[in-house]
Image (cartoon, rainbow, N blue to C red; front, side, top):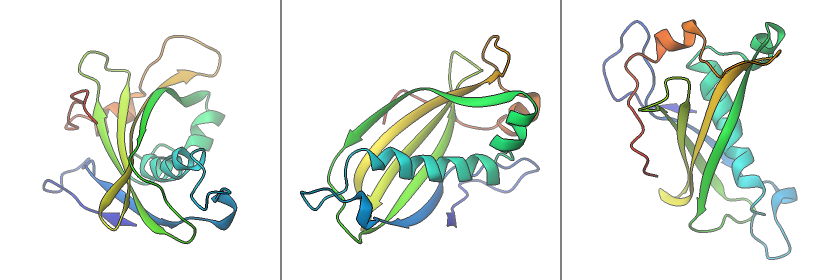
Amino acid sequence: MHFRPTFAAIKYMIIMEYSKTYTAKDEHIDFQNIMDGLYYPFYMEYCRHDYIKEVLGFDFEEEAKNGVNMVLSKYTLQFVRSLKKGDQFVVTCNLMLDKSNKSVLHFKQTILLNNKVVTKAVFSGTCVKAGGGRPFLPENLLQKLADAPEWDGEF
């Protein structure tokens, strides 16, 4: 795992780019000897969940016990090239706020192989109470997001 802060440390510093390294598992390789497209979002999810827990301090399991669920509302993914068996690759995660909807977070992510983009995506999400209701972001999370950049709508 690699942290690359892009601005000076502050009380609630949000790491602007977070990354983790993975290896393409044999069972994720299809008959064409490339990674099945189904698994790319899973590796992005692993990285994103670690970012959310380690950097934002949002523990999915603990929050769910307290009746707060963080959920995806949509994602867009673009494949550029394929991963193959045994490839070691880096997944990045960058957090951005929504310009018009303060209850939505955007996670801009890439999968890189030898510093070249393999896949890029934006995952958007929010929180909802287990019993229903309007989407929201918990106050403790909002405090940590005060200096996060806004998403410009680009990959």
